[in-house]
Length: 172
Image (cartoon, rainbow, N blue to C red; front, side):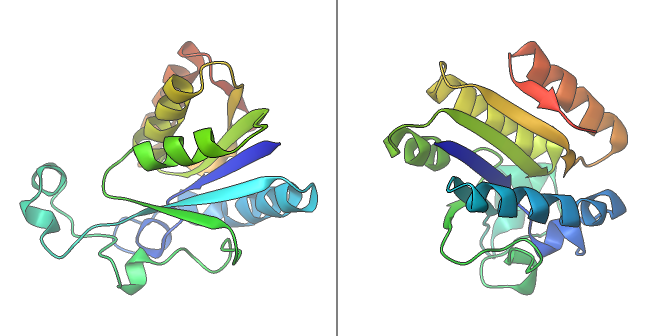
């Protein structure tokens, strides 16, 4: 079975405080990718950046002093354009998620993993690398046309770094 990991497609990263036009532009492609996986009987897993009201006092908050994805707020919600009820959602308090890797490792018969979402240069790359370390024999790919970075340069640099670590980059 194939696994599609949809990283942090949340209001704050799409239309909110950290949103970008690039993130908005990938919505239709992300939804088409999700629909294709589900139609084929494969698994879709969402990650959800999840912070608490004391975010600005955390290590991450001191380096990125923009309160975002605070649990329970509108900005924390996965955008309705891509959310499919019934799929697993892994809340993560940081860029990458060990819980995501554990969840995927518990699934039997995983033949391939694809990672899409935002931000390519922060959370997408973090989760792709954690999955690479946790499942070294499973092919992993990232569809660049279904990812948006914090900047075009960051997006490009992250794609190059993932390729160097034997993560196949396809699309865009």
